[in-house]
Each structure stands twice: as C-alpha cells, then as structure tokens.
Length: 153
Image 1 (cartoon, rainbow, N blue to C red):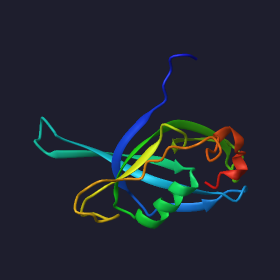
Image 2 (image 1 turned 180 degrees about the vertical axis):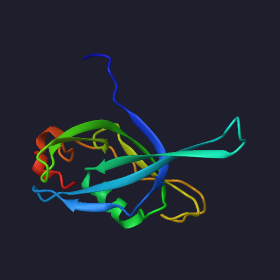
Image 3 (image 1 turned 180 degrees about the horizontal axis):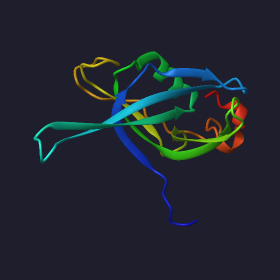
C-alpha cells in the first residue's frame, strides 16, 4: 500500500535486564521489556493515578545487540524508534495459536538512544548517548527470513 507508515516512538524505562538469545542462524537478538507510564490527578478524589503500559522491544542488529548487552540494565531510560509487528506462534502446551505484538529495531528507520539519569543503565551526567545505527542491506535481518522456531521467545 503506497502512502502508509509503520513507526513507533517510545520513551520509557527497562523493567528488567535485556535478554540476549541466539537464533538458529547463530546471530544474537536482544529482547527488552519497556514500561511507559501516564500519570494524572483523579478529578473526584484528587488522588494521583498512574497507568503503566509494557512494550516488548526486539533488537535484531548484532552490533546494537552488543551495545544493549554491555550498557543497558533494569531501570535504564531509553528512547526507541521502531516498527510495530505482530507475529503468530503456537503454544506448545495448549496447541493454540497465540499472537505477540512487538516493536522491532531493525532497518534504516530504527534507533535506540540511552537517556541519562540516576536510575539504572549507563551514568553520564544526564546527557544522552545515541546508539542509533544506519544499516546496510547486508547487515539487515529481514523478519520474513525468520521461521517462528528461530525466534527465541
């Protein structure tokens, strides 16, 4: 479809240390659990309310996976630009089809930026460190090239 766009922009904190897995093809992939929160004051009670959404982030570029593994920890604040993707898989116990929606960090328009701060992750005097990367065709992993069995989660 011409004129369409699949782009996700998020700022949040990691809920756990990154998971690094090896695919069948030998390449590493990183999975991040990112929390974004919204706060407001209840009009009736004046009580402060908060709603947290959890997002599954998948990083396919090996160079970026190495940086994620080395520098990101639970509590780190990051900014991600990626692509929304829903994949289907079969639950081994029940045999039922399941669906997972993820933000993929791969390709030309994806980036991950570590944001400075005092909670977890890398410490660098509240400045931002960008670990964005442009990808060439040879290093880009196409999602369609992966079988469901090759995705380790």
